[in-house]
Length: 86
Image (cartoon, rainbow, N blue to C red; front, top):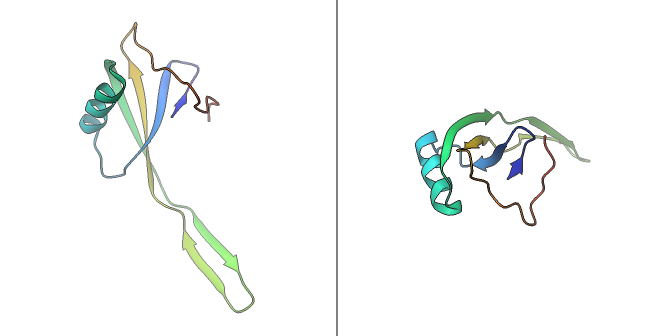
């Protein structure tokens, strides 16, 4: 989870979840009211590793990010969490 300067929180989610499920879980876990949820599917990047015998090709894992905006007056405590923006 990351906190952006404009008051949004960024979570990494399971790619199969939808906005409604994400909103319900955030409200249940952190006991806050969610104003909006925006999602972003991050495509996997191609990778290559050169070994002595061959070139191994693959890709990174597929991910989904959720940008959460909370209702005014609510916030999520960021104790022990990386707060650098992307």
